[in-house]
Image (cartoon, chains in turn brown, purple, blue):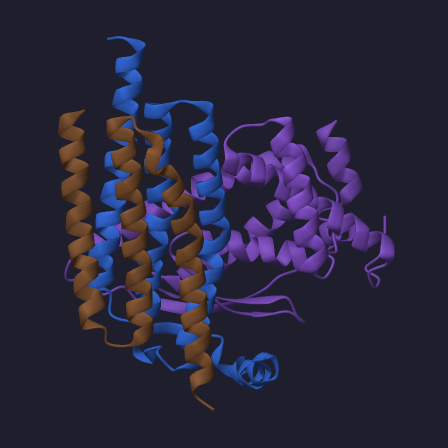
Length: 86
Length: 192
Length: 124
């Protein structure tokens, strides 16, 4: 299990780092939203993996909130962007 | 079966009752345990939500067919896995720039609910993404990743239409089945 | 090998597969040439990746209370991800973030006016 935990942690860290590069580079706001969504999914995966490896379900409710919040954020921002132009 | 007519009072009440049941189930799942206290507080909270934030009634004039639903779910999972692997392979093929296409797929099903479900299923599968949806002609405009040529594009369009067929078999009304080229009576015979 | 050992192995495989999908999404996000292609990459870790990791989690923890929470997470994720993707995709197309030279066909272009006019009506 320790090997799997290290592998998952390494993979998710790499994925998060790549996503961060995209958030910094942009170029448009929409690119950044998409990348932020991916980062959120990766964060959620990391929290779920942590709960699995320690067999400790304390942090699971956080995931419920994340699942809903990420959606609200993207919808709000893309709505705002389409309306920005007259 | 009912035709698609403007929502009556009964439809409204039915939608609200369904909403209360669904919200109560979610409430119980959130608490993580099914107790009488959770059940009653859940009904109370969801009734308040439904009364204070009313939504337009959902028209559903199809029938639920368990076998069709199971088939739809299994094929959906199979598609999901296959498509995820495909997109992942595309991501790791360095030095290859994937071409894509926006495809218009005119759906044959008519009800809003079924159109939404097809759109959701198509979006959830990586490699296809809804860009626009025309409510009047029930046409979906889908962005597809990794389209190689015209022939491949037609295959992908077929793929979406087959997904629609499966949904019609799972939840569609008799009329929708006919529109998809499936005879509702023949279908029953084959199943029995 | 015991039953618990087999279950642990399955959970480990699920979680590593989920993590690999997340990584491929990160790579795709960086490599793909335009916004719409990148959005396909975004769909993966949110759907199958998270489902796989949750499956692994459910196998490892295995109490009813926590599995119901995980079912709820999966349902929320599956219900909301397409809506968010559609909103962003629509905004991207209307903003002209689509690079025509990367498209093999664009069957939306002839009908595009219909939607831009409509958007003005429904942008309450």
